[in-house]
Image (cartoon, rainbow, N blue to C red; front, side, top):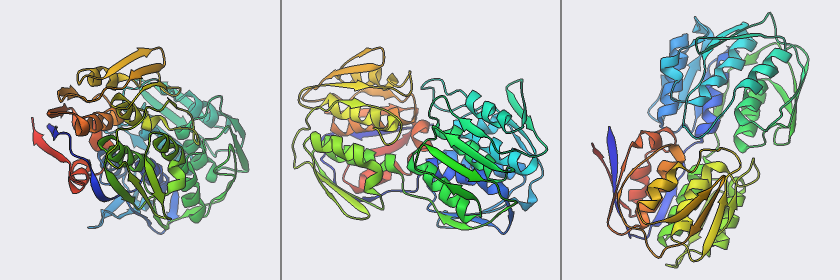
Length: 420
């Protein structure tokens, strides 16, 4: 097990390239099992534990997987021999549920462990199961496993009671091979959902309306293997922009799509940052200034992303003024607050709100990561803190950030990974 050691107080400067989006790649890997001819080749793949775990899961099912030196992944699902996702492989990631729809749609059978992942709140799978039941599947839960079967899924009108990204993705994939038309209402609009739909359409699916809250899918007889490059990670983009802002530096984030982070850019401009955009890059220049406090309220895309809440919390701890962070997605997503207070942050949590009074400085301390985005926020706090910050349980960070300490080193950060 490793930990990160950060010596703070260094403004970040330079250029950094964003990796492919984990939350786009994982559902595409799961969707690859539906290709009935040719191989699936996925490009712009981040080197992350969740990607490695998903590849191990697919291999356990019998999918032939080849990785090249550039982390492109070639998948051949013609060798699948079972439709089983065991607990020991999926206990650490909630995205494991995304193999359920593809397996059921193509093979009529699936046995998938109830998923794990970050302990940031309840993420019920009932909406997935209810939707698949409406499409004709027989569903059971026994000893922690979902068992599902059908002769053939039938198109249906699915309305989610609450916007769900993984639910939308699961039913989107399942409906591509279903008989007839499926309409998904209150669908998630995230760029990763759109990217998945574009990927499926390239495979031969018939999907319209992705990017809106109503998606229509007309089932087709089969999908084919294709080559596809995943979109860049908008949360990694936002994290590096905040890293520049919190340290008073100037950083250009390359290989990104600015429209996907427009709400983040808006908040950082309010914090006093000077931001310049091109088609594929974002430059944030803080000009050595201390940021101004900004209020945040999370919501489903295109509102402010919950996956950036912890990072903006870190920014506000050293900002001028007071701020309120309102978390509307996950009820346990303030677990980073307790660790930040160990560094001198003035934060008070009331229900789903964090009230922050900005301090002129934080003090380095030993802290412990509790989930993926909390890990990123503690790194950001460490970058601006006086003295040394040690962050333990950093296996969380490796689930969502590709070589984050190496990228920060490129920008001048004094950060290193050492064994505990």
